[in-house]
Amino acid sequence: MTRVFSGVKPTGHLTLGNYLGAMRRWAAVDQHRADSLFCIVDLHALTVDHDPARVRRLSRQAATLLLASGLDPELCSVFVQSHVDEHTRLSYVLECVASDGEMRRMIQYKEKAVRERSRGGSVRLSLLTYPVLMAADILAYGADEVPVGDDQAQHVELTRDLAVRFNQRYGQTFVVPRATRPAVGARVMNLQEPASKMGKSEDVGPGIVYLLDEPDVVRRKVMRAVTDSGRGVEYDPQGRPGVANLLEILAACTGGDPVELGGGGAYGSYGELKRDTAEAVVEVLRPLRERHKELCADPAFVEGVLRDGAERARGLARPTVDAAYRAIGLLPAGTVVPTGAR
Ligand code: TRP
Image 1 (cartoon, rainbow, N blue to C red):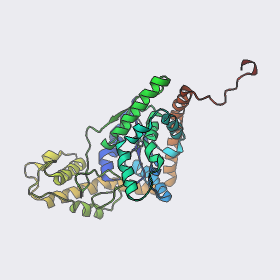
Image 2: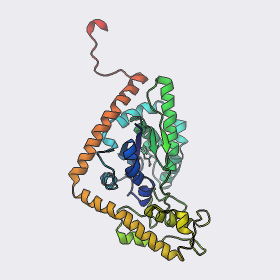
Image 3: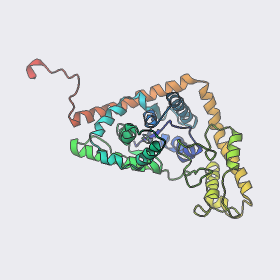
Image 4: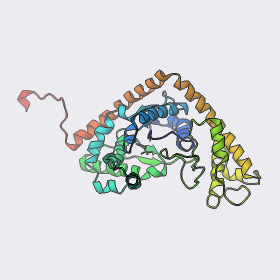
């Protein structure tokens, strides 16, 4: 059976972009067709300036929202990265297979390092080594498929390189995974800057709809979305990115097609389109918010899911990571050698 692994970084509140672009498909498709693992990658949240209480809160919230979005612990595993030691155990070994030049070439590292420095901060060493930890996340489970956005494609490519290199040097140990992009699923853009993705959890602002926004906040954000100069509604992502984004969102929420929704003069004005889009988003988020509220009232349930998830994850990862330790030349612990045989 195909194994799917993906991670959610608890550095910000989850957005409509995360939901329509990824989470919804994990729940509707992946957990039914594949052995799926969904991990709250909290160690990754420590690679930039962070607030401990916030990371803790966002980790619990991400877990709760994953379950609220329909992930079923009977069908898939939901767990927290730091609960499973195998990730860091494997990460070190992979650091011995990766090169420093390779790390410094990572686009996300370069961008984030510049950002940190411009804020007058120093760059954490873990920001540089982060893609190796991500590779460990994936390789520890022998994942075949890694559903990620375009911004993570380079990291999955690195993961493949490390797996192949390790296998060549030390013997067949890892499954070589591949990044998968959802065949269908919206690419939701920021309502205020339709050129950038809404999924980036580090960003804040009025162009981002969060999954836990109150309905009125959702409506306000959608109604204030930037549209384009020109009149009439039509689907033209190049020329009219703002309107195209609204049509994409409306289509993703209602199961329609953005081109059809924009065609035939169905919408006479931007205002009408915004109103329908706002209501569609509110309706899509309604059950999620309700389920989230129920789960918040039952923290023991969520904790139990995470405990079971971590236990299963440990059981899956342990043999692979042990095999990697042996293959690279580390002496197995606890093998009692009879005195005569030394
Ligand atoms: N780096 C990913 C992000 O920033 C999160 C992540 C960490 C991840 N480990 C992963 C995604 C493993 C997929 C698989 O969004």
